[in-house]
Image (cartoon, rainbow, N blue to C red; front, side):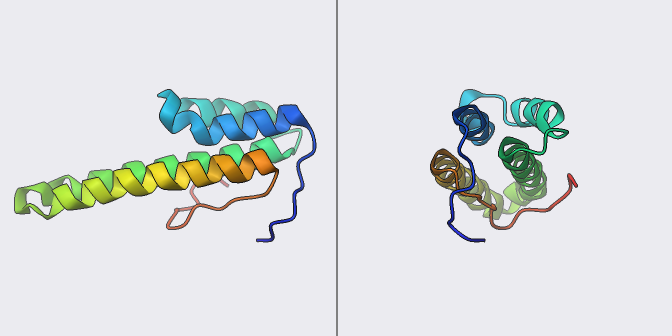
Amino acid sequence: MTDVPVTTDSNEKLWAVLSHASLFIGAPFLLPLIIYLVKKDAGGESARHAKEALNFHISTFIYTLLALPLCFFCVGFFALIGIGLASAIFSIVACIKASEGAPYRYPLTLRLVP
């Protein structure tokens, strides 16, 4: 993706940043889902960011579920720490990109929400 800013409306930027910051707010699934459902028909940048954040949170949840059984072999603890750090770092980067109006795609994300 390019780093060309495409979002000019401050409300669109706000909703885009909130969808990525939902991990820190405490509503990682709910807030991006609501933003996506409300904004998807308008086709704005905030809907794209909310869909990306929702896909990332679903992927992180799946990765966490896969790492939990590995905790019996002590490997899962390191995987859970890595998943937590990566999700925090990627969410911060996504918030920064959204505030700049640039598109952002999370790495290692399953694209489950079309």
